[in-house]
Amino acid sequence: MQQYNKDEIKNSLTIDQVFEVVQSFGGDPIMKEDFFISKTICHNYFGEGSYKLYYYDNTKLFRCYTDCGDTFDIFELICKVQNLNGKFKQYYNNEGELLYREWQLFDAINFVIKFFNLSFDNSFSENNYNVLLDWKILSRYEDLSEKYESQIVELKIYDDNILKNLPTPRIIPWENEGISKEVMSHHNICYNPQSQAIIIPHYNINNQLIGIRERTLIKDEEKYGKYKPAILNYKMYNHPLGFNLYNLNNSKEQIKVIKKAIIGEGEKFCLMYASYFGEDNDISVACCGSSLTSYQIQLLLSLGVEEIIIAFDKQFKEIDDDEFKRWTKKLINIHKKYSSYATISFMFDKYNLLGYKDSPIDKDKNTFLELFNRRFSL
Ligand SMILES: [Zn+2]
Image 1 (cartoon, rainbow, N blue to C red):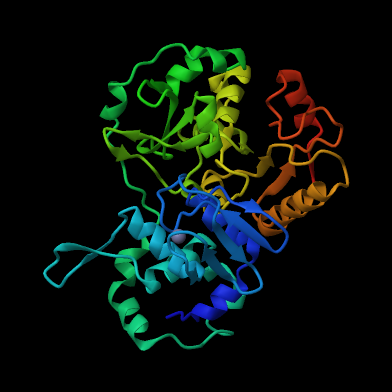
Image 2 (image 1 turned 30 degrees about the vertical axis):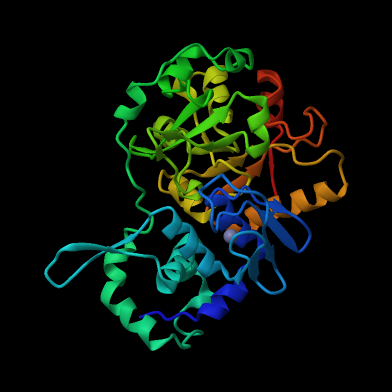
């Protein structure tokens, strides 16, 4: 059996990887030089909280400057987030009864291993790696690991009846941006009168409802985040964004045939894509952030894709400014990480066709096609 050393794993994680984890938990992190800041997901629900959680790459530690007032590592953060959100681990006792318990260090280690596919990484293979684990963790591993394996990435399925009670008015601001009302209706976009927000259901590849996000239409609310998990009937419909691709339930068949997929950042990317090019031609997905996880790439690879086209928002003002350098470094990392599995190409606006922070689809259909035709790989 494979053994992992907690500190070695922790120290091997790059700041981008830790960023990815925090992103998948809805922390909306913002990268600074050798640290990043995030919403306080350690003690607030997904998408809430202020930017008082700091991660420092030199110490590999988080510090929460408000409620927790504490320093902790990535594993502890994962436990905090999961327990806060009531994601208790399932296991079976000797009688075969299903029981629940809180996330513990071991679970968090396993989560990280799975999240980054570390078991496929040679540096973590049994040969080079044989170091310790706390014996307690070790015995727990033997008891429970198999039962956990599949559970870690199995997302909670919500009852979609909750959507049937919500009104589906025409969403004029989105129609004005080019999203057709048919596409909205096929994606079950609806409206939450209580919070005055557009409701965006998220489905897994098998069309099961795994989360609901909402986009506020109240200008003042935007400072708390334009997008957040929906709360309906006092229940929060959150999900770890990094473990799914939005719209894959709609685009998977076309992706299988064409063997290409285009990844944008937000849900609207997919809605606009389908509006412009037709739902029968839809090969779009959204990663719901500007980070890709290996889990999301695996999802696409499982459909036999040969090319993955990255169509992220334009995250720089001018070629060669600091942001440009950080941004290209990030894209190069994506390429490095996944190009042995498929062609990774980029719709990258070096021609200044887009505005700052525009998605390649934001301007119009022709600009999108232009950038698509000029996409390149490294
Ligand atoms: Zn905290």
